[in-house]
Length: 271
Image (tube, rainbow, N blue to C red; front, side, top):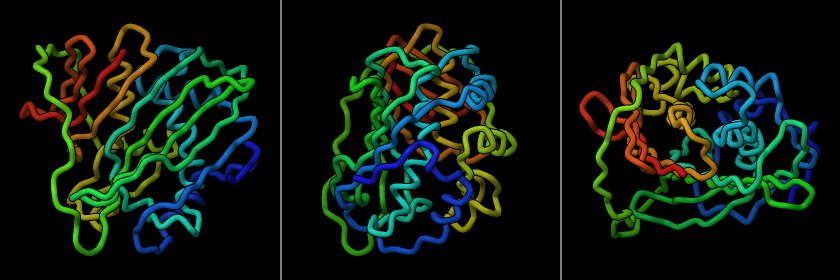
């Protein structure tokens, strides 16, 4: 396990540059983990995030756990012995669980490690597990699910699908996503992946327009829920080319973002 103090975490821009320059054939990931001592949430950055995404002032939303620890994710994925090109990954989904209240006054031990991985017809699916502990007790955790396209023949068969639930969807709020919103979100979150920023920087990755940040959509969906959420899971259904107008809909624990044609862009469960 690689161990660092919080003040040893690099800033995002050098990590993005390292990710852009990394050249490695995709393959199974080794067992790998990074531990950060004295991890703290930055109050100023959090307040800007809450204002932009629509969360109440002073709150520490589940999605910010992921955003605040993104540099650690890049630290792990840009390690020379990890056969991943971070900018070539596809984010499939993310889930969160909060076991105890979190506070800006506390420091945490944050651990990020490679979780389950399996080869499917689409490529290599793998998990990154993030855990926050305070005084030895697990406070909160997340699981980020990603896909790597592999070279050569694929395994046959189809990925397992969750059984469909017949929800009675009701509109909650609309969401308009512009390129300018993506660049503002990048400045606030530190996620400067070029695929999100401009059509010229998205084109080398096979997109005619920039795609919306998945975690921005997650944040807006969480912010649309009036009651406190301590457990949530999100599945990214399809890339969202900007500009795009969508509607957040809900039925009980079911939550989704659909486009103007009524097709799901992101589906979720919250509790």
